[in-house]
View 1 (cartoon, helix red, strand yellow):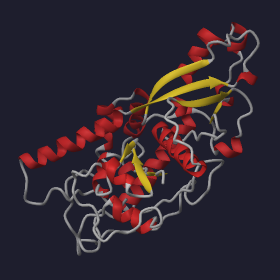
View 2 (cartoon, one colour; view 1 turned 90 degrees about the horizontal axis):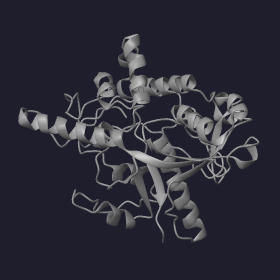
View 3 (cartoon, rainbow, N blue to C red; view 1 turned 135 degrees about the vertical axis):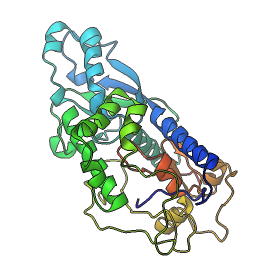
View 4 (cartoon, one colour; view 1 turned 90 degrees about the vertical axis):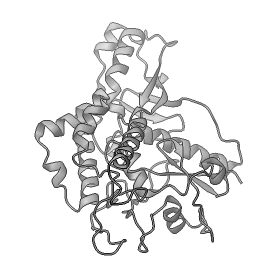
Length: 345
């Protein structure tokens, strides 16, 4: 996304209105940060060492949306060593051999935020239910199988370690920085301690420390000075990320990665509805009277479409402004992830 200037506030309205806008931005950023998802992590029964306690091989955790699976492995290991494995088996554990998949056999990517993994699974379940005309399963938590040996490294695309996850995270930050500004100077211009600190704040789940640093590179929700025409947004060409355009394994769906300006050419806000109806017209058919009221119930509105948009686990109203979503609901890696699910027809 090239910029995140909200259209709910206009130049010249300073003072208390500025502070109110900043308060609302911080509020939604904190709500996003504090979001969690329930996970049930079960060791593959075929890989449990002898003498394991097979009645306690499940580990339950309410995991932060902004965190990553490699950051959970130390506490999972402690649990397995204390409760499930005997001393001999525990001493032979090698975290570099661990990998995760869903009950359906979908390989889980180490470099995806946990919240995105959860939302993608929710979407996949809705697609399977729609295709088979079955009710959508409401079962919680997300059930994950932990494998202890033979990681499919050619499919994981990076080593299952915290350091590899950190490098992938920093790469995502730089790519997001380039998309917003046309260069990565804001990220690379951070001191080494700040670059390390932004990852440490993810590990420690420290909102204040993260935004103390991230605010230096993330666009605010206050309007930037306009340059040229209202829709004049710099569009930069860059190579796609490793996920863009591909069709992953099993029931994961195709990915679309787009640069989205905050304003349309006519100066109006670029809304989620406009983006989806332009890029996915079969699922979001263009309407003569697009929704404009912020009072529309998002679930009721979404049911009128063939599909719905899920952002940070929330069914998002079509009239939501892309700029606002980008400023308030992006992940810690700087990306706004929108998952599309199918409504029952």
